[in-house]
Amino acid sequence: MYTVPADVFLQMTEVKMHEELADAGVLTEFDESLGKAMFVSHQWLSDTHPDPEFQQLKVLQDTLKNIVAGTSSISQALFSEIVYGRRRGPTPGDFASGHLHIWYDYFSIPQSHGGRASRGRQTAIQSIPTYVARCEFFVVLCPALKHIDQKRTLSHASWGERGWCRTERAARELSTRKGGYVIIVESATHQSLLWAGLSMRDVPGEGEFTLDGDRVWIGRMMIQMVWSKLFYFLEHRQFHNYRFLLNAQAVYFRALDVEPIDGLVPGFDTEIDPSVDCKGFMLERFLHHNGLRNIFERDAAGWPPICFAAMSNNVVVLQALLDRKVDINQATTKPATEFILPAKLTALGIAFILRNNEAVELLLCARAQVNYNDGFGGNALHTACVGDNPRGVRLLCHARANVNQQSVPGMSPFMLSCACGNRHAMKEMLTLNPVLSLRHCLHVALMFAGGGSADLVSVLL
Image 1 (cartoon, one colour):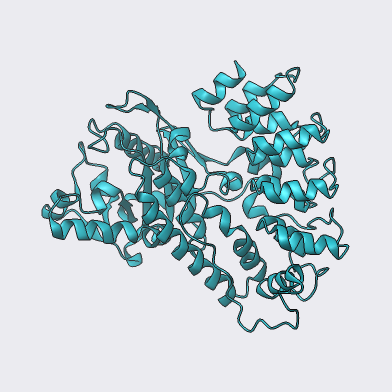
Image 2: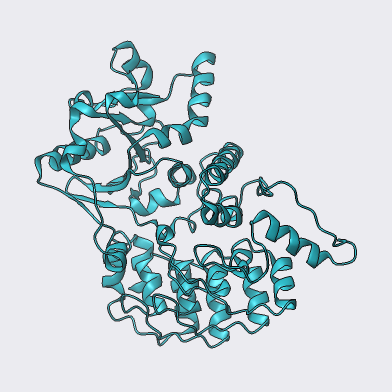
């Protein structure tokens, strides 16, 4: 993994490509004994060059200088701080230039067009998940700057739409690295920790790609990342995390030509004949691969089988559970703080968040409650808005979900969609409920949704 020492990076006045830096002896083959590495995720500011006028990297230079000098500090993610309180963040000493090394695609990946460089480039691209895992800091460098060729302003919102940027973020989420920080840099004086609550909403395959063929590369990378993380959880006996990812993995693979991993627990055996009782057979298989002994057993994190089935959008297993009189409104008993999920979340709420609308329709037809109170005080409509699920919003409004119920911190479903920057859910809510109050919604969008994209703000104006 090639990096540039921070003290060298801070002296740069132009962006030079990998080969030039290698010839100048600037690149370092990073080793953890040298200090800490920083992975910089960003959008290019032109079609052929990442930063032609050295605008983007100048922001990163000034940011590092300001943090070390104490004139700027990295704020907490606002929603996370409100719900869980202030958590430890990076200190100025963590960014000391003598021990910091920068990974940046144009510096660290071969850029020339010869055969050898092309092979090196492909190898480096395939190794991005490994590079991300080796970095203490994952930095989203997204100052508001105009793309030279496209004549549009790039920002945190546009970064989140890019398929490759989403893949890099997924690599961070699925890495086995303990600790570290994901930092959003929007200006030299405005940095914050990334809110993890929306990670499974913005999956790589549904992002924007310049070359649609890149989805093939992304699919291979995602399969390897999920496979490695599942093995890691099993080896470290983190069984709830294993179940969570095993059942959520299909979300990561949306719009990619790959199939979910079937399960890693060997020795499945049952006396049920699938040709006689297909649903019963699939239920037994589901319980085996999730390491659950029966249909009523909660795991150590307080999750019952019906919630995992909703997470995987497995309507066959869901129907089998309902046929056996499992409580359709059975809820989790503990929060999943890593993903900002509250306790008391039902299978219906989980399905809405992940946009598993086949499971949603089955559960609604079976008369699942829509106006429950989860651990944040919200109902199913809140979860549909968090998941930016317009179809789910429509189903719930027809089911008479309470549009005025408030969740922490005092937000209606529509207001929560504004806070999350979920304009599809916002538009659906306004279409179905044109008399909704917009009071404070613009302020909420600007405070919580990273300043709000132009498209988001236009929905409210």
